[in-house]
Image 1 (cartoon, rainbow, N blue to C red):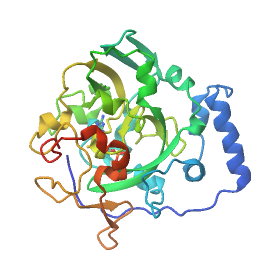
Image 2 (cartoon, rainbow, N blue to C red):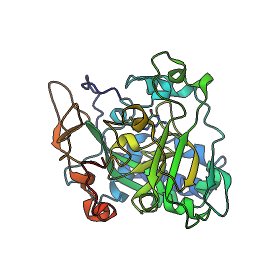
Image 3 (spheres, rainbow, N blue to C red):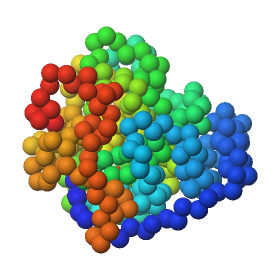
Image 4 (cartoon, helix red, strand yellow):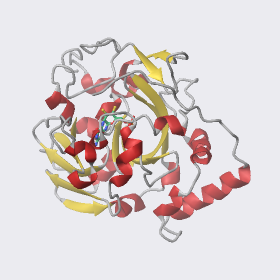
Length: 324
Ligand code: MTE
């Protein structure tokens, strides 16, 4: 994983959206969520990010957020990204992710379920009132951002496929399309594609574990966004696999891409833990975007990303320095 100093963020102005625009936007969202707008989902993509940031700020679930956790400006959250399918530089996704065809999008759920199958994204989303599904929380790496995600608990999606009692883990795989993903064709590519991630079943079924379909009110990705993404709130953000097309329930612990690449650095669990240093750097602090060399925005990292009360019980008796 390339980690380097953040060089010069663009700081968005936080203009106030007129209430009429905001209300209109609410109606649009409602209509789109219920399929009343022609084309349904694309209507959501028409919104200006800052309008939706306001919506999220009003409606967002902020458990685990610190009082001073303002939303990260949209520009910062969507131009400084890791999406190795499009290159290893943080600026590559915003430049190249538009080369990926994202419509139609479907996900296949297989393995230890009574009802295996494939669902397209519209069918998945039609079951949720997304206006009520905006979650505001931070994504933590060496840097961090606070994003209003739109999504729903993974458990609600898995329930549709009826997991069997044998299922112990969930294995996720990303879309792999060489022709549209320049990073996978690059000679510097080190990942064994497709990109993979995994969760234990109890982690997957925890209500804090989300499948996200957008952020800042945009349910369709622009060039830098993901299509269907896992977000596990108490883990480091690199576990948050983007562009999922395959979910397999299994009784064997899956290997994740980072674990495979550097097992001494990245484990299966990857819970946010300031007490355990990464072999090459301390994990006590994160740089909240926007942050720059001259104006560093350094804050103390919280264990389990601040969600210890909700999730620590899942790891009782485990040495988290060993099972990192
Ligand atoms: N998902 C896919 N498919 N491919 C990737 O390269 N990178 C991971 C994760 N999800 C990655 C991925 C890493 S290393 C990080 S840090 C986060 O996405 C970055 O999320 P962000 O771009 O929203 O900050």
